Image (cartoon, rainbow, N blue to C red; front, side):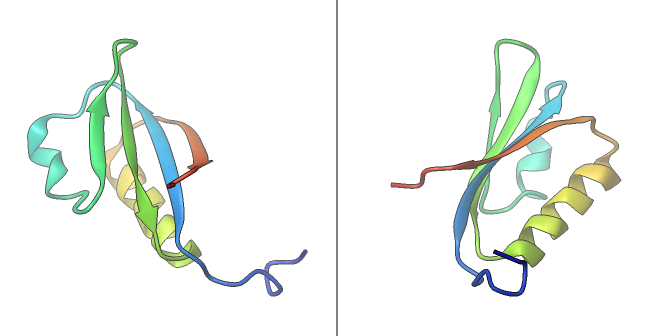
Length: 77
């Protein structure tokens, strides 16, 4: 399937970044859940409506200067 064949659909994602993000970043990642993990990383998790929203989230992580460890699609059921 090519990118043009794939319909835009809401999908759950989990991004993991190095380090623990302070609580004040929760507002910047509005609608997403930030979880401080025991291994020293932060997971950012939620449902994104389409690829454009995913790219916007990736840009926020970039602008924050955080090291992106992984991006995973997750089951939202």
